[in-house]
Image (cartoon, rainbow, N blue to C red; front, side):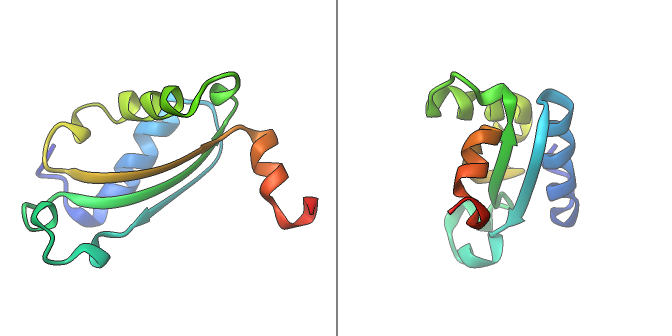
Length: 103
C-alpha cells in the first residue's frame, strides 16, 4: 500500500470510501504540503482532510462516524500511505444546515 504514489492517494481514498459507504458528497484534500518537515511527512505518509456526507452517519456519534471512515480506509491507515486524516463526517441534514442557503 505504501507504494501508492502520492498523486494517486486522493483517488484511492475516494474509491475506498465510495465502496464502503453510501456517499452524498465527498471532498478529499491533500494537505501534505502544509506539513513539510514533519516526521510523518518525511516518512512518506500524507496528510489529508475529508468532508464526507452520508446517511450512514445518521444516529451515530462522532467517534462512531470516524470509525466507519477508518474501517473503510483499512490498511492505508496502518502503513505509511496516510499519516494523518482530518475528518468532517456529516449527515445530509447536518450538511444542509451548514450551507449558506439555509441561513
